[in-house]
Amino acid sequence: QVQLVESGGGLVQTGGSLRLSCAASGLTFQDYHMSWYRQAPGKERELVATIDDYGWRAQYADSVKGRFTIKRDDGESMVYLQMSSLKSQDTAVYYCHARLRGDVYWGQGTQVTVSP
Image (cartoon, rainbow, N blue to C red; front, side, top):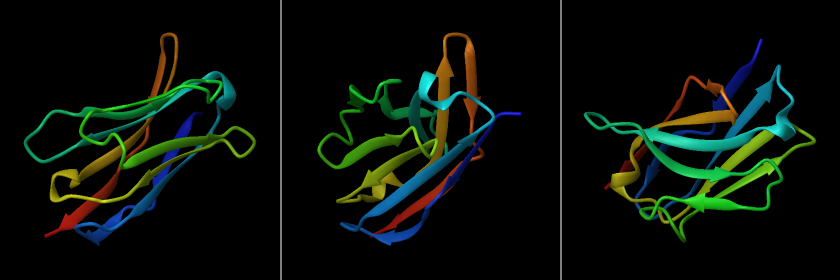
């Protein structure tokens, strides 16, 4: 049974930082592309950052470039999203996502709220 469990969300002031973590189990983690998505109230879910299965290539949404960093630790089956210079527009539920060809898995999400 595949599980993706996010943690690290919370309430932070504008300009602050948070690190989200996603613990994966039940899959061969190093084979999966890992991503973070987010969904704000009333908006569609959007891709925030993604990292390939080798951890060589990371890509980011334009809105978070230079502020967010995605990293993976294959030994621990973990993926992280380091978020800095947070803005109110970053308020959303953040989801961990794993993909290997047709296999796609989602975590349950963790709430990030950035106060003015």
